Length: 352
Image 1 (cartoon, rainbow, N blue to C red):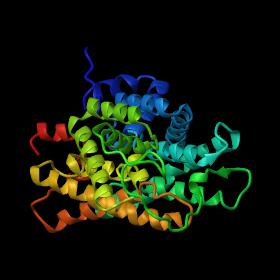
Image 2: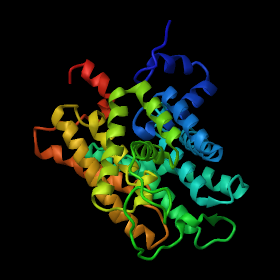
Image 3: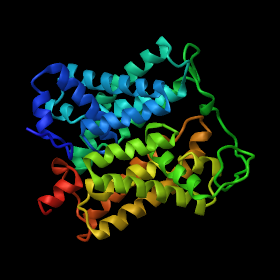
Image 4: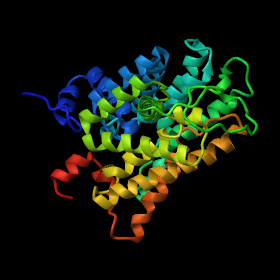
């Protein structure tokens, strides 16, 4: 029987379930894809290839994170079906990527141990967060668990000596902002189409802390395999974040490297047919959320820089939750019940 690569690949999941090792690997790959709401193993593979292009260490750190989280969920005997979708792994993948990026020295045993332990905690935090978001509000946990694990882990490095933090975590005072797309400070701004397109794809890569154009393209390819709609809204989100950064006069280096876009990628994809029923009005709403997320990113970068920590995906989490609560007060935008969340294409096929 020919396997379809689209959607959630249920036929492959049934085959993978015949062997525990295959099922575990499949769960981990789905966990990588679930960072952008798609539990598709091929999506996970293409994302990992994208990370490998950007940095072998980033790819390994992400793999260690998702594997540690998935294994911890199995040892805790959490719901097997949820584990198989990668829902307990995606926060671990991001924890691995973040700690692998911001902790030093890379490839060292202490950093590996930190990634394993922090990622293994993420399913516990996921359960706690879901007890509030899912059970009380019928809202997804999003990447709140990732932020709740990664931010304390990064802050702890200011008080210990065996694990060091990257210079990227230095506490910054207010600095003069130079607008205009530029790769580094002090160079002439660039506005040619290639630079703009590069910033868009870097914004997508930065979801996984991959500052690389090719990585962003491969991530979009992975999304496209599972859902054309999610891939489209991911690109739209990055464009919206970049345009907000330029229009508001954000730091040109940050815009160039996709930092204004990555949270908006997640917000746009989340509202563009995953957690809301896809309609034209919903699409406009998703873009509005992406723009609001970019503004919130600017605010949280200012606050975080005073403590030496990045905004991570908190802007996405906060903005998306706020925008998902609005449908309770209107009939013009419909939320997808959490138990029925799938790909936008699948919901369009069943006519809801």
